[in-house]
Image (cartoon, rainbow, N blue to C red; front, side):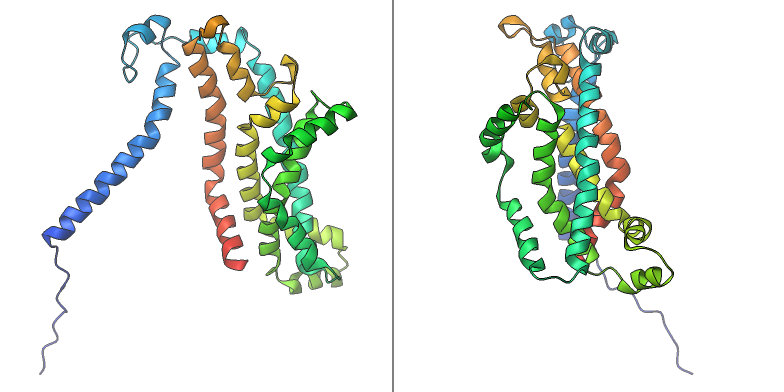
Length: 290
C-alpha cells in the first residue's frame, strides 16, 4: 500500500529575505513617524506656555501643561465665528455639488440624446483649468455684482470647479447601474424623480461619500478663495483666522496658534477617518467601472 505523505514546505527563509523584510519594516516605521510627528508636535505644543517655547526643545513635553491656549482661542478670539463661517461654506458647497453632479452624471449615462458625449467632454475640460487662473476675472465680476465679502462669492466658484471631477465619478458609476431596477420601479408606478432619490442615490452611497469627503476636506482647508473674496472679520474662515494670533512686528502667540490649528485639524481628521472606507470603495467603483 502506497504511503501518502504531506508535501513539504519548500519555501525557505534566506538571509536576503530577512534583510529585505527588516528594510521594509524599517522604511514603513520611518514613514509612519515622518507623517505622525507633525501632528504630535502641534498637539503637544498647544499645551505649552510661552516659557516652554523659549526653553524646551521642540519635541519635549511641557512639565506643566495648560489649557489657557484653548481658552484664549474660544473666548478671546473670533474662532467661533470662523468655525460657523467654514461650516456654512462647506454645507453650501457640498450639498448643491452632490445634487447637481449626481443628477448630471446619471443623466449623461442613462438618457440618450444628441450631444451627450460632447457635453460630457465639455464638463471634463474643467479638469484642465485650475481655479487660480480664474480668480482675477471672478473678483472683477463679483465686485461689479456687489458679491464681494458674501458667502456666494466663496461658494459658487468652488462648486463650479469641483463639478468636473464629481460628474466624471458619478458618470462612471451610473454607466453600469442596472437599468432593470429602474424599469421595474417605473412599472410599479414610481416616477423618474422618485426613482432617482429612492433607488439611485442609496445605491450610489459610496460614490456620494467619496465626493463629499474629498470636497469637505478641500473646502475646509481652502485659503485662497476666502482670502480673495472676503474683507471683514465677520466673513473670515478658520484658515484665515489663524493669522489673528500674529501680532504687530510679527510677534506670534505660538501656544494659541497651535491650539487653533489643533481644533481646526481634528474635525477634518475625524471626518476623514470615519468616511475613509466608503471613500476608497467609491473611488474603486469609479476606477473599475469607468
